[in-house]
Length: 74
Image (cartoon, rainbow, N blue to C red; front, side, top):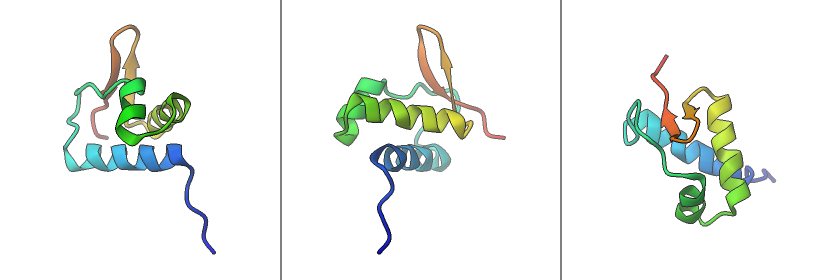
């Protein structure tokens, strides 16, 4: 029986789909970790791991004190 991916990966996959569809455009600020937790009904630590996963996929970048933004495609 296949196992479900961890919560953080499902959140990251959903946000990635929104980035790829254009719902989140290049340069657009993403919701904060706390807001992502609320939107997906997950713990803040899970939302943080999802953001780290998106960063590892080179889909987002952070700016100190300003937030996390969608990276340019490529």
